[in-house]
Image 1 (cartoon, one colour):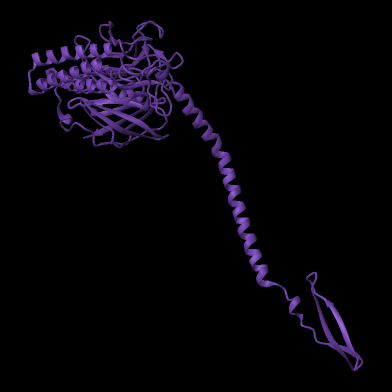
Image 2 (cartoon, helix red, strand yellow):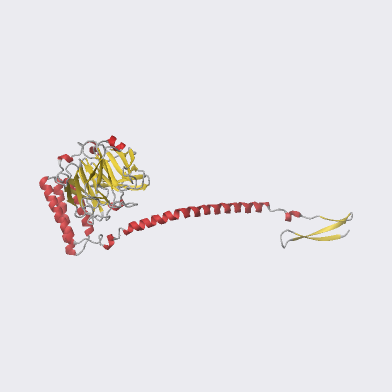
Length: 451
């Protein structure tokens, strides 16, 4: 027997197996354990699984990169929008709007409020007016103490004066023709319908600012009107009037009225805050803090000054995207004619005034804590101020209410309001048919209000 030693090299480098062989029938025979050359199936499957997991992770990361690439421009646009909106508020710091108020200003406001309370107590003495007198005296004492101690907390005093002013406005005499009727016994709206009318403006979609509606008066005929804002979406002078609902829907038998000789005349309309009440057009006068009225029958103009109102894009409706030249907004409901605006003295928050149509003068004014630039639009229903905010391209939300009867505010409302385009130029309520009328980027929409 010849003993042979074979050196066999394994597949893995550095590994070898020594075996003994013997000669048998003229051949060299040996037994070799081939287990070391067996294919590593378990390891291969583990590596394959790991590789598949890596591939899935890579694909997911690639999808995220693609999505991020698509979303990044949108995020950058949103950021630029926010920065642009923030620039509009810089004056709050540069002009010292939020700096401590001067004692002289507070003293003037105390004196004005004292006169208002005294007049209200004289015209309509109640337990509430007596209570207001005592509270005002306490505030006057607090201001004197601050002056003597050289310790100032005038912002808190300002807030107390705002609250007292709203309460005394509610106490003042309300004319008989302003008495709430019908649906107003419920005060707050409970719901808003889907659009009853969706119609393109007769002036076309390019006029994104404007107003439309039905003449607001219980005794008026069913007349409809549309007012476009031209001159780079700033002003206008034209009112298109329809004698009936059928004529409005068919776009026939209209007549065009002009409140001024041109859209840059001092009596021209600025912005989309127009309302028509019993044949009289009410609107912001061009470039000024004045209200204008134009009687469609007599063709006469009249003016009313709002000396503290911010105008010319100082306090327009904004929220996500500003609607320029909307500083002053008009509304009419069962309690009369209203004007909504903002002032520096109220920190840019919404101010609401009731206007006496007969004398064309302001009779009462309420100050809210609703920052006007934080809303998309506002309207009046039954003496209650409502405000809307942007939800998405096709939806708004009525989120805020201020009741002039109680002076109370509610920012917990959530009434959905549909639309067909992002921007709202004008939104107002008509007590005659209990409908809301919206001018929505050149589209005319109406809704039913429920109580």
